[in-house]
Image 1 (cartoon, protein in one colour):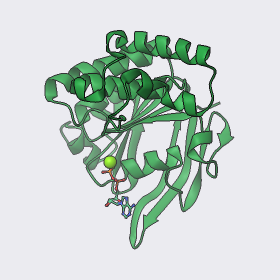
Image 2 (spheres, protein in one colour):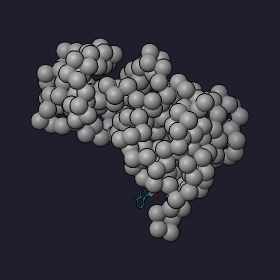
Image 3 (cartoon, rainbow, N blue to C red):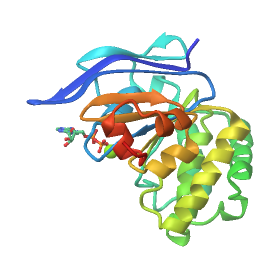
Length: 238
Ligand code: ADP
Ligand code: MG
C-alpha cells in the first residue's frame, strides 16, 4: 500500500490551468521532493494533499484511504510552512503543546510527546522562551516540533528553509534529513532549490507549467533527464 497517491489531480484558478493532471505515488518512509520554478503549481499541489484546496478533478489517497473530501484536520497530516507562524505570546512549550491541548489529549500524554519531540529536535533548553527570543533556525525547529508532536502519517513541507540564510539552510537540510531517517515517516517537501532536491529526496518530482516532467530518484533525474526542461533545470548538460 502506498503512503500517498495523487491521482489525476487538476486545478484551475479562473482561466489559468495550474495543475494539468498530476500523478504521483509515494511508498511509506519516502522523502518526495516537488521541485520546479516559482509559479509551476507546487504549493497548490501540496495544499490539495493537505486539504486546504479542493481539486477540480482527481483524488488524493493517504495510507489507502481516499481523503479528497476529508477536511484537513481529519487527514492525519502535519504541515510546515515557510513562515514559521508561531504564536508570539506563547512559550516554545505552549506553541508545541497547543494543538494537543485543543484536541483534548491527556496531560500526561502531552508531556511525553513534548519530551520526545524536544529531544529529537534538541530544543529542550528552549522550552520556556518566547519566539522573539529565538534565532531563525531555532524558530524553524519549533515549527517542526509542532508538526512532529502530532506523529502524523504524512509530513508536508512548503519551502520551510527559504527564509533562512545560506549557511543555516544547509544545516537545517541535514537536520531534516536526519530526522527523516530517525522517525522513518513519509515526507513531501516542496522547494525551488535543485540542490535541496538532489540532497534530500528519495524521489524527485520535477514540475513545470502544472505538469510533472519526471518522477524518479535523484541519480536518474540528473543523469537521465526525461526532457530538455529537466536537463536544464536540474543542471545537467542537455
Ligand atoms: P509555486 O508554489 O510552484 O510557486 P503556486 O502553486 O503557488 O506555485 O501557484 C501556481 C499558479 O497558480 C501561480 O500562477 C499562482 O499565481 C496561481 N495561484 C495560486 N493560488 C492561487 C489562488 N488562490 N488564486 C488564483 N491564483 C492562484
Ligand atoms: Mg509555493
